[in-house]
Length: 158
Image (cartoon, helix red, strand yellow):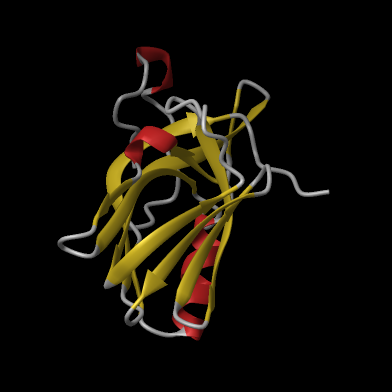
């Protein structure tokens, strides 16, 4: 795979030819797997949308591709991020926790995990921020968008 939107000096970089990720979660086991692939995804707050009429919630992430091996170039280790769209259907309401009233819409959130409790999906971000989605039933889709780029930063957990 060659990076799209890469600078000319990086056009020779290649990662494994892993196909774009496409996942669906309709139960807790599926959600656990999907959440693992989204760990450490960066989420621009401005990309989060909720449509109450259609009961849909979506966000565009900059997903860290944990499934790919890094590339070594010029003694630097490079990893990969990819745009990935998360769509959640059957959402009745959304509650925010940990967001201040004067929240900066340009802020980037770091998604830690997605869990479920009693018809509520909980998206937990660093900084004690949560989005709690009341759902009628679980139907979550995650799909990579074929636009990836190199990064030298690998998320670390202490």
